[in-house]
Length: 204
Length: 111
Image (tube, rainbow over all chains, first blue to last red; front, side, top):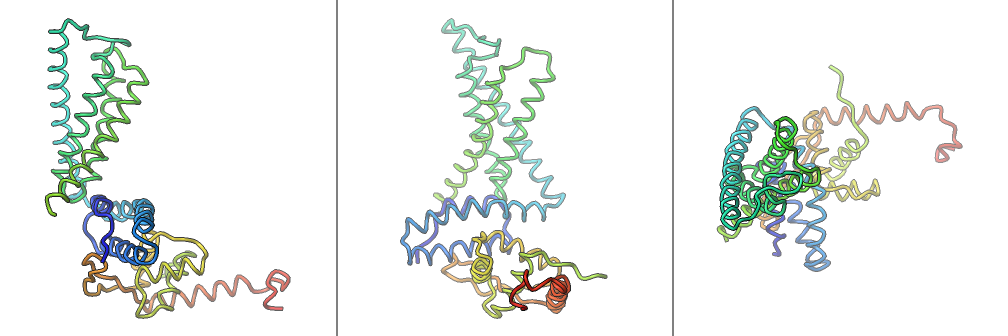
C-alpha cells in the first residue's frame, strides 16, 4: 500500500486535536490517495493530496474551533505566553550581542528612520527569534502545534504594532513593520513545521 | 419543538446516506453528492455537513474496524435516524408545495 505524503498528513494533524472527525477526514484522504496512486500514478495522487489538504484546512480549523472549551483556550494562552517570553528574551539577547559586536567594530548602532538596529540585522533577528519561538511553542503544545504557532505569530505582531504606536519613541518605518510582521507570521509557522518534521524523523 | 430544517447540501447528503445504505461513508457520500450536484466537494465539506446533520439528530454514525488502507484509521459509517427520515419527508412536502401552481412552461416534465 502506498502511504500519503507524511509531512502534509502530520501538518493536517497539527491543525486539529485528535477526534473522530479528524480521523475520518485523514482516513478518507489516505484511502483516496491510495486509490488514485494505483489508477493515476503517485505524482498525480500526491498533487491531488496537496490540493485536497489545502481545501480541508478550513474545515479542520472550523471543527476544532467549534469544540474549543475554556480549558483549551487557557492551554493555548499558556504555551503562547511562555513562548512569547522566550522569543522576547532571545530578541533582547541577540540585539545585545549584535550591538556589542557593532560597537566593537565601530559601526553606528542607529540607522535610517532612527531605528534601533540596521534593518537587515533587525530582520535577521526577527527571523531567528520567530522560527525559534514557533519551534518552542510547537514543542510545548503537542496537541495543536501549528495553531499555537499561528496564534503566537499574531500575538507578537499585534504586540509589536501596539508598542510601536503607544510607546513614546521614534516609530519604525512602515515598510519595516510590514516586513517584520510578515517574517514573524511565516517564521513562527515555519518553526512549528520544523518541529513537526523533526517529530516525524524521530518516530521513523 | 419544530424539526430543524435542511439546507440544500444537507438535503443532498442526507439523501446520499439513505441511497448508499450500508456503504454510507465519507468517500462514497462525497462521490455520490459530487456527481449529482456536478460540483467537486472537498472531503472536509462533506464531513462538516455530516457533522451538522448529526448535531440536528438526522444521522447517527459508528466507527468500523481500523483499515490499513486508511493508515490504520477506522471508517465512519452513517445511518439516517427517524428524525432524519421525518425531515426528508417534510423537505419533499415543502418543495412540492412550493412548486404547486407553477406553469408547465417553467416545468415541462409536468406537461
